[in-house]
Amino acid sequence: MKNYLLFLSIFSILILGCVNIPGIGGPSIADITKLVPDKAEGYAIIQITKILQDEDFKKSIKESSGKDIESELQNVTKETGFDPRTFQTMLIFFKSSENSKVEPYMGIIVKGSFNKDLVASKIKEKQKFTEETYEGVQIYTTQDKYERTTSVAFLDQNTAVFGTKESVRDVIDVFKSKKQALNDPNINTVISKVNPNAMFLAAMRIPPATENPSGTDQILGKSNAVALAVDKNGVNVDAQAALNFIDSTSAEKAKETFDGFIKLAKGYTKSGSVSERLLTNVKLSSEGSVVILRLATTTKELEELGKELKSLQPEPIDDYNYPEYNYTESNYSDYYEYPENYEDYNYSDYEIPNQTE
Image (tube, rainbow, N blue to C red):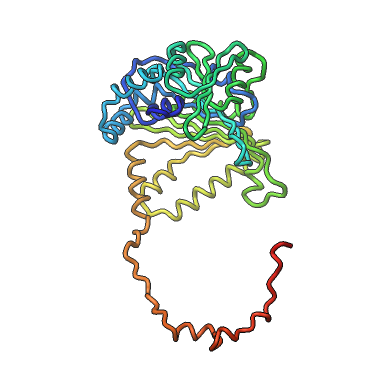
């Protein structure tokens, strides 16, 4: 983990590691979403506490890594000052960009318990960094060997912000009431239709449809926000999606379209297959301008689905024998005619363009 950005170190541990932590309750999503800048198009919330306490997650990590995760986390704390075991909730906000040369607008807000003085001292010891004070908050910007930068700031003892310098400054402005937080009524509507305390929750604005949409785009083009929530309790998995439309008429048409897609997909599945069973269990409904899809399943069914889909993939062709072609002088003469004496070849027949023009 040496020479990695502080953010990447912590994020990797959260994704790849696991640990037993006390059953503390994380902050409500309202607390953390109040810090999202209005410039953002959407966000995703990950309940770190729930993930790290999940038995299947612990088992899978232990089987895949074979390492003592507890000691790994202790090493991270020793090197960075962060203790991932205290992390409760992580929110990732973002804004898409059509220009690939422009630095993406994104940031991460983490709720937990932090010793910001210890972290700051570790940054100064280990990282190439710059430091600045913005609105009374210290921002540390680190740079790796590829000249990629990540800014880090602490709003208080329980809130840390990572991301581009622009996004970190925007969060500080929202925290200091200098700028507005994201408060999109359409996002709020779809969030209210799914489980707000799910292990994973994402919501975003949907940009307006292109001009003169047709077919399915004409229907779905009238949507303006979407939310997705996935929760897990033991072996039970509950997935929900909510899509908001400009009016109830558009929502009803979209519901009919989704229902048609599901029926069409079932027609291509094998009778008695896991795919057919899961498609049958999809519950479709509408409430006003919102279409809601829900699927209740189990980890066993999802594992069986993975095996079923894998069995449908064609076997790779490793030893394909391509026919060889023996190129000889006689072969070439079938396609090209050369003058018997190349010194007599008249190049003046061909005009060579002036390269300097």
